[in-house]
Image (cartoon, rainbow, N blue to C red; front, side):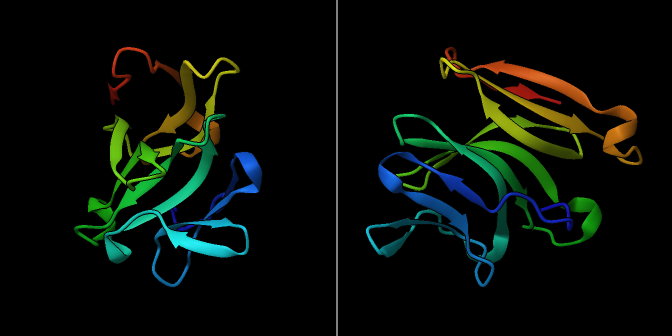
Length: 140
């Protein structure tokens, strides 16, 4: 994502591996030698920098929404992906860029960094923490 790339692989429990397939941009699960598509939507979404909850039910990651592919209208967000259904819930939105979502050791919070154009991440990055207990959503 961000046209720079990003962590395309995340590890879950029981040896499961989750990755973003370049050919169609969908999230996939690799387990026991076979893979399964987790998300639908074709190439509308791009995913990166995921982290899987210890119970293996959810992945928090950066998602780019290319519904309108004009570069200035691509929407970046932190989302929670249900790894069984592929349903996605927005956790953070409203800024231009998001990166590095990470779970707290107890799994009750997610931290990430965010910044806005024209700044680069080393100029004006903010570290934010969202409590996941009460619906855990934040907006720019």
